[in-house]
Image (cartoon, rainbow, N blue to C red; front, side, top):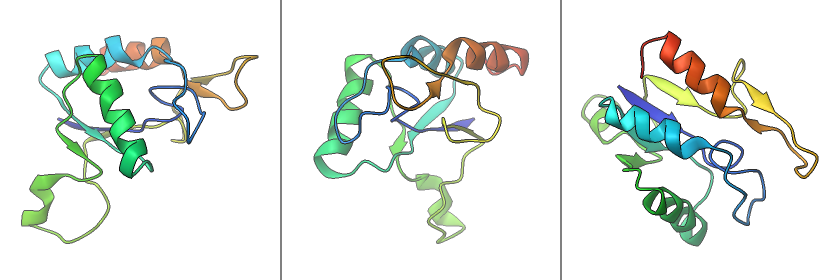
Length: 123
C-alpha cells in the first residue's frame, strides 16, 4: 500500500519552520516499510525545509518512495492531490493525537496509531 505521511505534528512536534522534536514515528514507520508499504512524504515543507525533513527520514533509516506526489498516478490523472491508500496526518479527522506542556500544538500519538495499524492488518 501507499501511505502518505505528513511531517510537522506527525513525525516531529510543530516547530515549523524549525525542526521539531521527535514524537515516536520512526519505529512505526519502519514497521510499515518492513511490511512492504511505500511511504510518501506529504508535507508543506519545500526547498531547504523539505530537505531537512528528508534528512530526518534518512537519519532514521526510513526509505521514502516519493515526496508530495505519487509518481504512478501521472499515468491516469493530472490531479495535484496525492493518491494514497492511507494518510497519516495530525490534522486528519479521527487521527489520535496527544498534547504536551512543552508544545503549543497537539501531535500524533504513535502508540495509538500503531495499535490501529495492527488492528487493521497494516503491520
